[in-house]
Image (cartoon, rainbow, N blue to C red; front, side, top):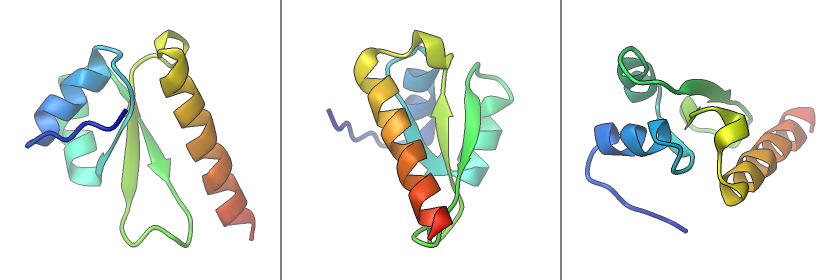
Length: 83
């Protein structure tokens, strides 16, 4: 499912509640991480035009679809970085 929101705070709050993962700019990820409970994972690879980060709550508590998305994104980033 894809969800569009107007601000990064709402997106990060949904991540904090375990509703999924989000791709947000570095500044937003680290700014909201100061007072919200989620992890920031760097997205790397030649396809990234700017530094983006995945924000996740506890990986073990993610819903199955969010765990699959996270695994896919990690695998994709690993493939891109290795080529």
